[in-house]
Image (cartoon, each protein chain N blue to C red):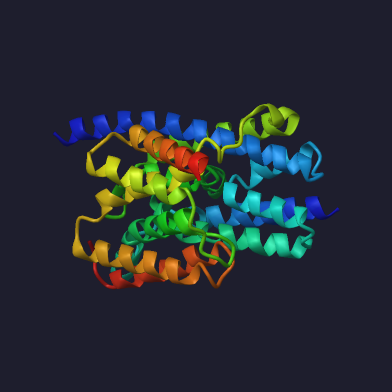
Length: 223
Length: 101
């Protein structure tokens, strides 16, 4: 029974990855386009997508430099946005085996969407989905960036396609199955509440990192 | 140049952030109090992502067409639609509301 369930959800996982990859590709293309238009040249946006592989931080860096912000301001904003990967990577640490260098390389495939898709609830994650989705999304992000840098004007604006509204709905769909027990519900409510309360007063990125404090509700209790 | 400084510093920082758990912890078994905290990371961070991606801005709350996308997505979730359909419904609702607004 459980094998059957796993196989079905795995297949659904593959389909979801395809839909998300198309969305991520468009955002990669618009990052490439915006960076090129902002005077970044051809190579720098490409290198950033290869190494940083995190959309929100890359868009923040382009927009801050583009509106006359300093390098320091762009770095602080992007680093704050990506600081969430510390708790995110801790949550999936047990999936990574082998030598440190291999773990370091594989860990680069952790991105919001691959992490969310691989989540199985009760703190469990599926290694195959995390790595598989990560590889597909990495390819989509980098190739999208390359196309955007070279000829992004030909593509539509991802916002006019509503793609920015697709991501929160995806995260909501992946959150709902995790709310089976009262403690998870309380922690999710508290985390969402902390994020909402901080949004008007802090730079983007801070609300998510601060929200992870809600995990302390789980202290000393195994699920 | 500014751009390369940003690309390199942000790149190195992000690589380290993503590697923090897998490289420093790996398969080491977590003590029970910590394991209880880590188990809640997924629901908490997903909830925070839902909120920030729906109404998040830089130092401001932004109420725009994304709200319609998440609302339509929530209806699709309640109707037990498959995940790819939820994503498509949310994008379509966002696009339509943005077009009309």
